[in-house]
Length: 67
Image 1 (cartoon, rainbow, N blue to C red):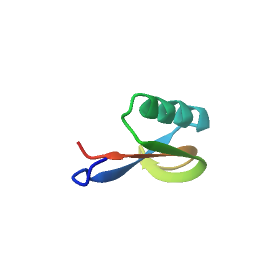
Image 2: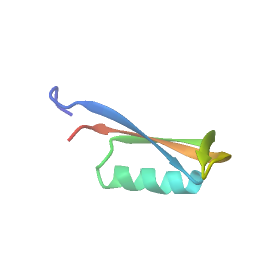
Image 3: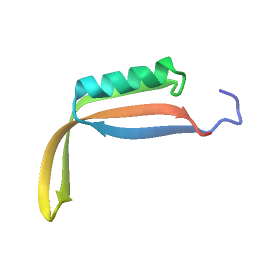
Image 4: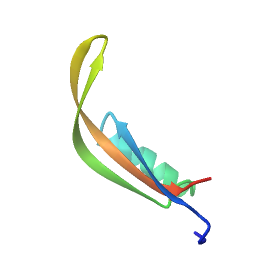
């Protein structure tokens, strides 16, 4: 990273820990992210088709630079 690079963090929810780990590892291996962190369980609330939904998901934090 140079002084001109602008760091960014991207937050991605996935259906589970395995999905988050696979995605994060792939991003790091392909040098698309400098680091990825998995938070195994988060609780999400949202409306879908007019109904309140509650889901247990995993959160992937992707640290990279703006391109």
